[in-house]
Image 1 (tube, rainbow, N blue to C red):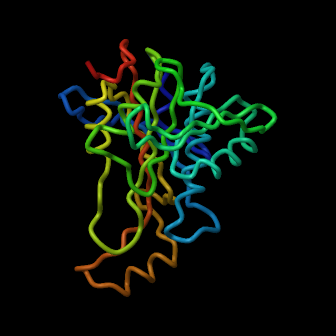
Image 2 (image 1 turned 90 degrees about the vertical axis):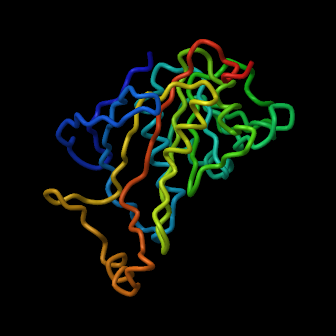
Length: 250
C-alpha cells in the first residue's frame, strides 16, 4: 500500500491539529480526509492557478514519492512544469501532456534528466510508473472514452499512485465541484480511491478563513444572484493502482 501523508501538515507554518474526518467512497467505504495548510498564494491575481499547482506538486512528490523511482507529472502546460521541476527537485522526473486520445494517438512524453536536458520520448510503457501527479487546473479534462484516466491507470505499475490536483476557479457564477467526476473517472479506469486532501489556500483565525481585502471588495460589488467564489482551497485526490495495469479495460 502507498504510505499516507500526515492528516495535518503545513507548507508555511506549524502543523494543524489532527483531522479524523472521513468522506464516503462512491461504493460505501469511507476514505481518509486530510488537510494541508498552504496559506494564500503570494503575488498572484485571484484567478492564478499555475503556481498553486506547482506548490502542491512539490508537496505531493515530497509526501508520496520519496521511495518511488519513476514519477511523471502531467499537465496542460508541460513546459512550465518542466522548468519548475528542474529548479525545485533533484529527482529524475518526467513531464507529459494530458492524454485526450487513445494510447496510439497520444502526444509524446518529455523525459527529464538530472541535468535538465530534454529529449523526445514516448508514452510510458504500461505498468512502468510509480507515481503520476496530474494537475487538472482550472478544471479537469474528461473525454467520453475515459481519458486521461484510462491512460494514467495503464501507466501505473501495481501499487502505484495517481494524485489529481484540482480546484474550483474563482470568479462569478455557481460553485463547480469537480471531485465527483474525477472519482468516477478514476474508479471506472480501475483505480482505488485512497485519500482526499484539502489544501487550504487561506490563513485561518480560530474557526474562520481570512479573506484577502481584494476578494472582499469584489464580493461586495456583486449581487447574491451572481456571487464571486474566493479561492480558499484546492483538492488533491489520491488513487491506487490495483494489480492489473490495463486500467480496468478488458
